[in-house]
Length: 164
Image (tube, rainbow, N blue to C red; front, side):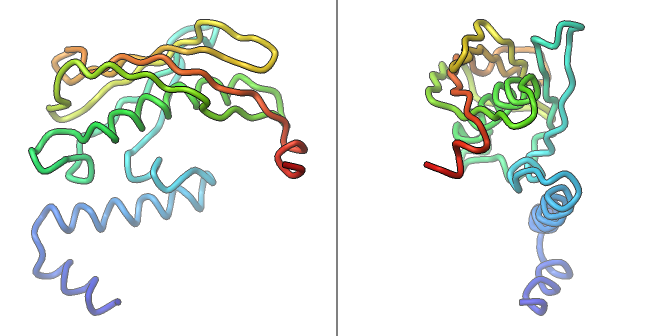
């Protein structure tokens, strides 16, 4: 395996070397922040856009990892970015011992994801005792809408997770 990695690094394309770099970044981020590997591959690092902490944003670089065969951002990556923004917003708003999981995701794809970076914003529309409803929009670097979604998240307790 090490020989194969070395061969890719030494004689592979720039795109292949970038993918190896992303893999190392994902592993490092998992170790440092205990985040999902996908978070590292996508370069997720978010911030709140308002003082009330009801809107959250990721700005991510478009990398070869994200492309489909047509050379645009894969629809599944678009969905993952949207779901991750909404999920991060909801989970950051919960008290310790509680977490949320996606129970429903509805996406409208408007145009292909292109450019050098993508921006995704998520907002909480409604918070109940067990469900949170959000909306999210993803934009290209020309600020054109790429996709819009709504999502529903179920709030669970950590101790419930162990019993189910």
